[in-house]
Length: 400
Ligand SMILES: C[S@@+](CC[C@H](N)C(=O)[O-])C[C@H]1O[C@@H](n2cnc3c(N)ncnc32)[C@H](O)[C@@H]1O
Image 1 (spheres, helix red, strand yellow):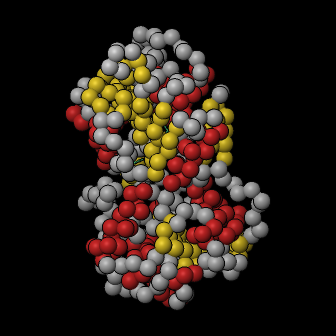
Image 2 (cartoon, rainbow, N blue to C red):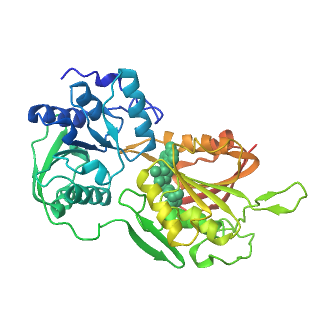
């Protein structure tokens, strides 16, 4: 087909020469639809990164396509690409019955995690038409037999096709009976902190090791929840130093509840731990993943702090006010999709600098091999190392 795929842009997501807004899998999926000739209103698209599938099909005359994208950045990119190409007539949905009811053809860009795939496969089997055909595609180098096994839990027939231009389609048909309760969200207790996770959320219901290191340094670790653990000067080389965030003072010099932002909140482990340890604090948690946002909201409810933890689906906290935060907590991503690219972390450092008031504190945990300290100093302000192990480094940056 002659759709101008190369005109698509990734923005507001990171753009770089080695990062594209479409791939050969998008083209294979679109070509498959053209050969099947279904009705637009019976097509659902899931995981359409920047809108390539939805827009190419809309341009080809399919009307009423339903699309679900997990990332706020992808949703914005799709809207902008549609505007620029003058295309309309499709509708965005969450991963729910409204996306899938009556759908007879579901196109899926395979997600990175098996848990995310399992939640999607269950949703298709649960809500789509009985004769639905699920066509899932991916780059061969990222595909595994385990993906077929996961699809096989929800479909009687799963057939992998021959690879073309380094991409491959897998076709699943005949949805199985679904369990009464969907497989997600899942939950796990961590010594006083309950984490709730949808399939696409970072680390699932586990407490990530990096997150745990940051919680320990901030004296917010699960075993210390609701206790006022004593600060300790500590020795960065032999154990985490407790670093109580200094928070805010009002005009009279007495301390007021700090305004805290958990930037890229995932399941909300940092936001909810902070709220549990500081009963007067209000925390704003934000993530670009819809699965993360749903998980963090459920985590806040599970821990009884939903009235003090607000969760938003946004790109780098763009809707939060400039210079409004006293403290930002950050465990940045270092993978961008399936390519390793640190641009995603840099965007969040820039966002932290925008969100913090002068003198506000950014606490960051990152893989020690990444050496972000100089960049944090440049983008945010003076940055000290609070703790370092072979694997993780925790820093505090003071907004200049
Ligand atoms: C390493 S995970 C950390 C999750 C959580 N804070 C924790 O410690 O368990 C990074 C998170 O940042 C989110 N993220 C990445 N880029 C983002 C962006 N531009 N805006 C908002 N969130 C973003 C990801 O979706 C992911 O949930």
